[in-house]
Length: 249
Length: 117
Image (cartoon, rainbow over all chains, first blue to last red; front, side):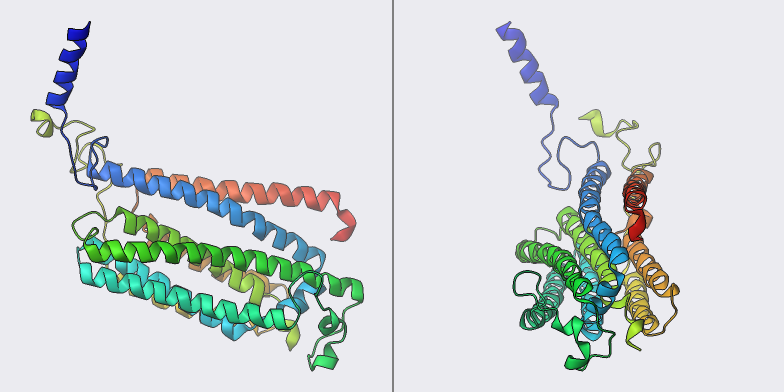
């Protein structure tokens, strides 16, 4: 028994090839298969993320229909120029990430590092603008909770806002808009913060040369994550900032 | 070992007998630039459209443009246009499931809270 086991072990060791390249681990038949398995896994994760954000989008859809007047005036308090600027910043960040994936594929180490730094840079600008927007809402007492102030919505003329005043009970529903605004943009910002932490780590590894010898999977899969976060914002921007804009005129 | 030399369905680096393991496609920076320009252009269009009062068409246009932008990001920035059918089907199935969940939940809410709509 013992000797039989030993013989089998010996045979396995003889036939077994130890591939040390990270782009081709020994349990995958081909590099292409490994790559496809990696992309497939990343997409499954992103689909769970779609379901997660989907719950928030659904809550928005429902309450917007129930309390439309409150959602319209509350949405008009958001700054379209800042939102549009942030959209352009995020698209630029995504573009740099995409070029970074290309740089890794054609093994340009320097360009990859530059592109990852630019991706991080645009991501940080986005978060900075977001902080400014949150701070404005804090000063206006438009963060849902005990200190929430509805007077801007019950008496818009007193604040120089051309908007029909809301009845106090409907004005209270603006809290639901702002709750969803903070929940959705906050969860999006959290994803960006996690992404930026990962970007620091990937930039360091890229600088070390980990991704310029044919091993691009971490860059590629992080790119998928970063573009997914972009897509969430592509929907948040029109839904939160733009959709009720026309009543202002 | 002789393992490398034998061409089987599993050992098919050139994807001759197993085309599902698609050859990796590299999207060029020029193609990314076109996508980037399109995304910025449509961001401008969606902002401009929001300031024109089109009634019920405003949210439809805003969401239509958002969907279009999302699709080109998915197809080109995320390389889905060049992925294998397995990955395309998986993503399609995921979005389809998402729509089913939204539709069923919305149906439930509409039919329960009839007076509120």
